[in-house]
Structures are given as C-alpha cells and as structure tokens.
Image (cartoon, one colour):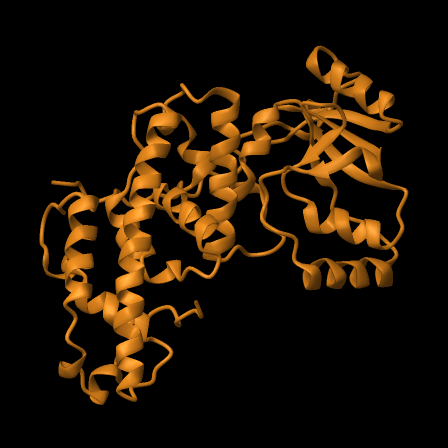
Length: 320
C-alpha cells in the first residue's frame, strides 16, 4: 500500500532579530577564494564588479556586478518565454527609466553566465536595447537548479512548472544520473511534476490539471538513482496518457449526447477515481491508474444526466 504524501510544513515565524548577520557583518573588503574567481570571470566577460558582500541571512558571499547583456543567458531548462509578459516589463522599465531588480547570475559551464530567475527581465532589457544589466553573481552553481523557488516574477501554471521540472531533471541526469532522486526534492518541488512533465513533452495540449491531485497523493521521490527513477516516471506518464485517451473518448461520447460543460473531463475523471472512497493507505499508483483506465473504457455515458454535471468542478477541459 502506498503511503499518503506528507504535508509540507512552512517554518514558523522566528523570534525577531534572531537569525542572520548585522549590517556591518555583511561587508567584504575584497572578493576572496571562489568569489575572487567569479570576480575575475566578470572582468573577463567585460563586466564590472560593483562590490562583494555577504547575504544578510545565510552569510553566503555574493557579488553585485554589471554584466554585458550578451554575456548572460537564461538557464536552458526554464519555462518558455511569455511574449506578452516581457513586453509589459519592457514598457514599465522604459517608463520609469530604471532597472531596479537585478537578475541572479551563476557561471555557465561553457563560459559566460546563466540566470535561473530573470528570463523575462533579461528579454525586456534586450528589447529596450540595453548594453548591460545588473546582476547578483552567486558562486554556488547549484542555485541554477533551484529555479522553481527562485522564479517569482511571473506565477507558474501547472504546465510551465512541469516542463521546467522535467528539463531540470534531464539536466541533472546529464551531470550525474547516479545520484539519488531524493537528493533533489527541493529543486524538483513535487514528484508528480516529473511525470506530468513527461506527459506535456509528449502531448503539449495535455490537460494535466485533472490528474495532478491523484499523482500528488501517490508519487513520492525515491532513493533510486535519477536514471532509474526517470524510467518509473516515464512508465507512469505512459499510463496516464493511455488513461487520458480513454477519458477523451468518454468525453466525446458525452458531447455526442448533447451534454456540454467546460468540466466534462474533470467530471469523468472524478467518476472513475477510486481514491475518494479509500480510507487509510492508498494502493500503488500503477494499480490506481489501471483501475481508472478500465473504468474509463467501460464508462456508461447513458447513465449521465444533465443535472449530474451541475456540480461538476475542476480544471476546465483543454482542447486536444
């Protein structure tokens, strides 16, 4: 039996002024060690170091720098660029005449810099013809993997989160696929997002919102190496996509009967979902998906009445 996923706990409010550094303790006279190497790279790229300091919470060394705009690129595993969003940002920056929100930068493997959280700000500045951009240069390259936690400039929808997670996952495998999956739980946010990411890769118009609550309950990060765990996620994704075909067929039959609702897919999935009747430990995900697939294939649309749809809620159906 599968265990219920444990709920995340946010840290309680700490006692005032109980953590971090005093302002004077954040000062660094000059970059040293790895920070000095990062400062040298800034200079090699044609940038300027404004100053080194320690971040006031964790005491990690940072550089405030101005980088040539051509020297920095978004990490390759970020969500797709929103054309409308970066144009709006460009308009606001242009009206104020100020760029007040430095991007985070880490050294890129092939030279230059990556930003894990500034894709839209970077594109907005390029749209305005800027020569350079202000950045907080972080020595620890692992920050690049922490994109979901860092990227707060535009809220992620489920598809964007899932595609970012699967891109991060594939990047981690390329670096070293022998490391356990649980080591990267913070970077990947939720195990279900890996499976959904595979689904969205194979079917861009996939309506993952109706399956996410099920996957979140039943999938957890494993101690398997990343390469092995990826095979499990790919297997689960295949089962979900197979199930989705059966659900789509049932939805099509409901429409043929003249039943209309933006929540038809969510309605069918809710009807075939066995978890709502289960108390205690859940069955394994594979068993649940197989049960749902069989129920979807046998779904009797003749028993569905218009009033049954009145209370149907969930993510609106997406076009295939």
